[in-house]
Image (cartoon, rainbow, N blue to C red; front, side):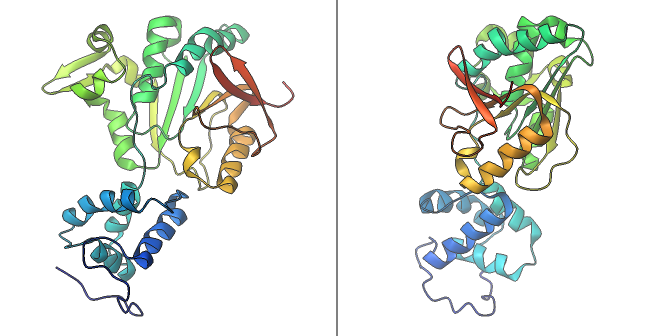
Length: 291
């Protein structure tokens, strides 16, 4: 059901092969940048491959029809689905391994040593479908059982995608997803098989509070956190957006003696000089300057 073009769009430069013209790609890139600050320039193939299922879901014949419909501005769900399609949800249990080793051997013991009767508060931003916060909950259950008592551990898991937040709340995964990072014993101990899916135990899910949050928008009131994990997401943002996020984490969320964990290819250096890099085992963490 090919719609008429929005006023002012002559259709010049539109391709007939189901791909996006340069102008159409720019429209999508500008939209996504304004909504979630993700930069798509130079990623035409990625954009087109992710938009194809959206076109099918809305009974649109081609990618150009998506742009036409977006320009009409009458279908909010289409806009939401286009933006969500551009988010990167690649994740796995215990991804990269070494950050969790550092949490186990250095960070969590230090936090609990400072406040033996206190707890652990973690913000896991850009948590995708929940494997990362669940990995932390599994680590705590296996290595720090005292922290599993009600109220002692709070893991706030946030993501821009409502669908990913819902998956985190449900804690339900395919066998393939469970096999990515968990051994057989962990799968049996921490998940309950329900048909073709494996569902995290209520004890694990009780440690996690999942909410929708867009990192580039105003944040709701946040708890002061011992650990903030913003891993493998800053690479998609401009330097200006990275700086804003890092400054707000340091100013509004991270405790003065807290730890910031980024992805292996991410750093605060040259972006926010309010942090000091610190090597803990195999992992570089970032702490507020002046500690």
